[in-house]
Amino acid sequence: MGNPRAGLVRNSFVSTTAPAGDTRSDEALLGAMALGDESAAVAFVRRYQRRVYGLALAIVQDARTAEDLSQEALMRVWQHSGAYDVRRASVSTWVLTITRNLCIDFLRIRRATPVDPEALLALGLVSPGPEPGELAERRDAAAAVRTAVANLPPEQARALMLAAFYGLTADEISRRESIPLGTAKTRIRAALAKVRLALAAGLPAEGVTA
Amino acid sequence: MNPDGGESTRPLSCDEVRSRAAEIALAIVGGPERSAALSHLDCCAACRSAVDQLAPAADTLLLMAGEVDPPVGFEVRLLERLRRESSPQPPPRLALRAAALLQSRKWRLSGAVAAAMLAAIGSGVAVGEAIAPATPAAVQGGAGGVTGPRGYGGSSGGSGLANVEVRALRSGSQTAGEVLLTRTTPEWLLMSVRDLHVSAWVSCVVSVSGRVVSVGTFQLQDGQGTWSVRLPRSWALGDVTDARVVGPGGAVLASATL
Ligand SMILES: [Zn+2]
Image 1 (tube, rainbow over the protein chains, first blue to last red):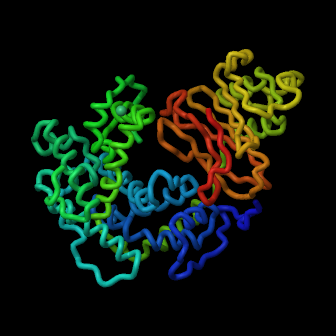
Image 2: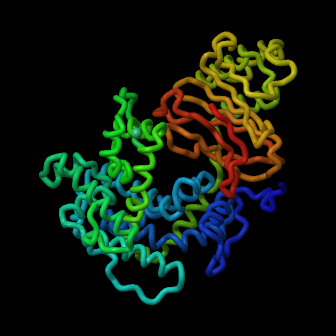
Image 3: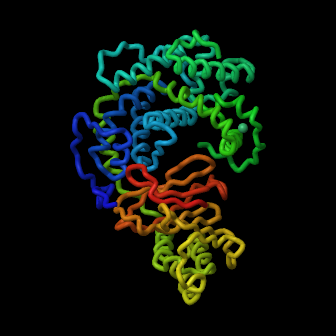
């Protein structure tokens, strides 16, 4: 099989320069990172830092804390880069889920109250400039999901935000919103079903019945 | 994610799992209920598909946060930390020695020897001392070498071996080493790899309660390497169902079913 990277070890990075626009796929970068290729780590960090930091900031609402948590998230990505399983999730989902989970753990340890989910709904509404290829696609996906959520009944949107971003359980949502547990479960279920259908159809959520 | 303290859980019915599919996809089902849901999904394709249909939408929600420039210096600080922490963690010394011994003997170990060695790992007694008197017996268990799957913990196992399992590591149709798992608390996993024809850092990835988790990385040189790790205490006996050697590109180089 003969591995061209034979002999590389993690504690002696081979390169400290990353090409400006590394064209390797996310998966290829993860693989190279696992081998200790620093140029891959640099390229990966550049590719993901704005998404990771944006998510952390959205959840914890504090720049300093968001930076710490983002760094920790990207460290974990690097530490587990060899274990990423392409069959289970996209790299982007994997990275963002790691970030989200760290933020949720942080909030739970601090017993911090999640910020009002309305703040999340107002996020990222700055209109992006014209961007090439992949970035534009990602922004389209973000815009589509924002539209889908914005079209939900407000109480369903809130329940969904509290679950997706703050990891609140149905029980916690029912207490926070002073509603019966069954109602909280129904809101979560209905909201996610509508978002799924809206994303699948490329339509706003109100245009579909779940 | 949040392993419960061994609380026994009631199995969930299909209806119960379906009614929680959204919560499962959003990963907000916690504790014992989560374990019950995951075990149900493990063996029920219909419920799994119900959750899988919702999971992409749940994942996409995170994109709403948008992209924000991190503070100045973020990248530099992160890369410095990455360099600082990039030396691999050495496995615990005793376990390393035990693994080296196992490797040197190519698994021609009697059950008693393996048990003594593993007891030594658990109790902190020097492995060398525990193993030395038993050496004459060392080849008794398999003079020809153990080349296939061999469950020391099976009914044919020798004294005190109910808590050790040895399985062949398979790469395609070839045997590429062995995996040993102690059925103790905590569990230890020892991996001995050979003939993989790569020199690279590889990950040891296990399936535990339906999740796939990396338990560490180690180096193969000329296709060989021996390595061990103590698994998290929170994992219950029998939770680990397989172990894999995953290469740098994410490819599974070898695997063993436990
Ligand atoms: Zn079912």
